[in-house]
Amino acid sequence: MKKFMLGLGADVLGSVLLAVGIYCFSEKINIAPGGASGVAIMIKYLTGTPVGLMTLLINIPLLLLAVKFMGRRFTLRTLRTLALNSLILDLGVTPFFPQYAGDRLLGSVFAGVFMGAGLGIIFLSGSTTAGTDIISFIIEKKRPHIQVGKALLLIDGAVLASSAVIFRNAESVMLGAVALFCQTRVIDGLVYGGDRGRLLLVVSERSEAIARRVITEMDRSATFLLGQGAFSHRETKVLMCVIQNREYKAMRDIVAAEDPAAFVTVAEASKVMGEGFRQILD
Image: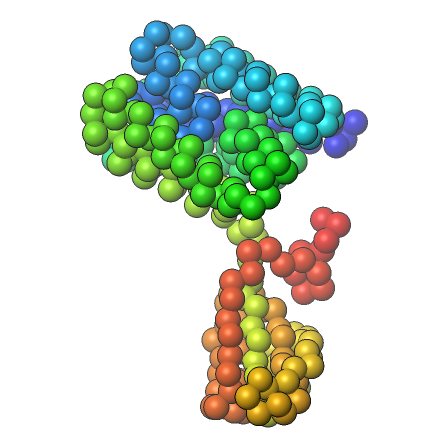
């Protein structure tokens, strides 16, 4: 019951924020930032059909596919989120909230921020709003050789391009792209922001000395990977260490002090779980 109530609360809060982004900003300034909601905004512009209802109707065929490819439990969870989303948008936000009628660029930024915040909360609860999420899963399952990111980018690009024709305004495409960019950045910040870090691979003859200083000065641990130089064929220990972003300078200074000739690879870790970071079961 506790898990159900938490999920329901996340759906409601996320749906409110998403509805504000769609009704108060996207609709008024005529932008369609991709996905099913973008299509629904354009259809409302042409026919007057409420965006929430149209979003639900657009997703019905996708939900039927989800039953087959993703299972009944996932589909029912998504249907609950989608239904709440549509009801809150058409009956809770549209009749009572004002619409922003100022600068279109500023409106597109806030549209992306509110929509991204709403979607991020929904994703954190383990649900989705159907649409491109289902499409991406089906593409990945049926055509694993196709890069899902590029396929979804084409879909959102087609929606954005269509908005120029529907709204008869080329600026709608650029503003929609701004909103979509803001939306994805906010989603990434909410879903991965608290768990980001840096992954460092250090190839050095003094890797053990570097590891000792990392342990004593940074209160971090590290892992040795056995490696072999492709040219020299000499065996070496590659130091692997995951740190928080704010610890990067301290780590760089240690490596530079111990071995200025070290070879260092730094990669962004979008999610880190375990000791020293968020626990896996949290």
